Length: 329
Image (cartoon, rainbow, N blue to C red; front, side, top):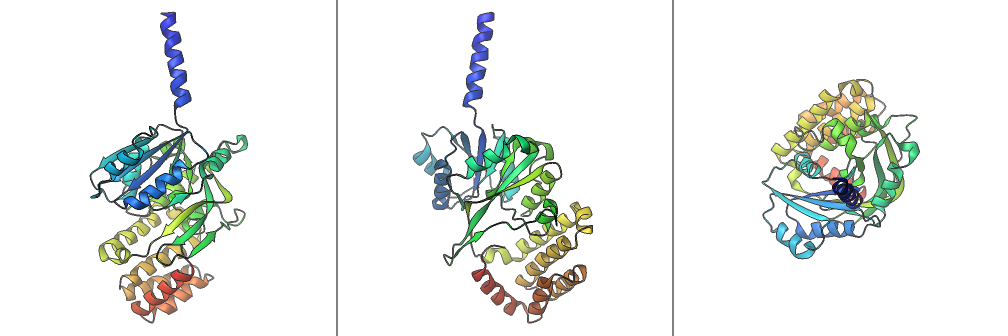
């Protein structure tokens, strides 16, 4: 019996030693060529103790066959196919449920990491004086896929002026999942992504984590975030879902918005922009005016309001030109 217990303890020790420390989760829908780029950026990491979980949201392309052919011999890579869901948070939750590690990192299939990303973030989140840190982000490059333009994004955020939750809700802190390393403990505690959201689930997730854990940011370029221009985002059904997401944020985090004029103003500007870009010009003008009333000191509200008065066509053209010179937010 003692011999059996020793063998069992030894096996448990070996399993513990071989267990991944980070679960990297990539969700995908077609775009096999971009997925390969993302996977390769994970495999080039200087930190090696990870598992790579790929969740295929019902691709029509043979993503599974490609992964088996190119990466079938790499035991760190696990592939799961699900019937098409269409909600990023719901698909990411499937990946989280397959995770075997104490830390989780998300990578969008069209983005890529620089080699030291995981190593730098693991170092920070495990420092003894940061035991309550639940999430670590990093500076990054933003690449406009259509123009080839690239710019550097370095976080300029002052916690003495605004807390991180307000930073998230006011657009001062980016929410792209690709940037972050999170504690699995934190994800389990808050209940993963809220699947009621269609697209703002990243805002919701970060706020709920930051209600209970500290936030840290590495002042180093560790990711390449790719921006694609698409007409899909202005289709009426999608726009309405995005607006509903914004209203859901208002409702869910009302106590933060009530105490942060900048948060409310920025959320209203986002809704107004969606309305104008989808042709709902009158509603957009009214929303921008409400943003001005909420925070008269924010010059951006006035610019959006004046531009909207010229109509949705002019607004779209100027917005497209602005996006060309300032990729990202």
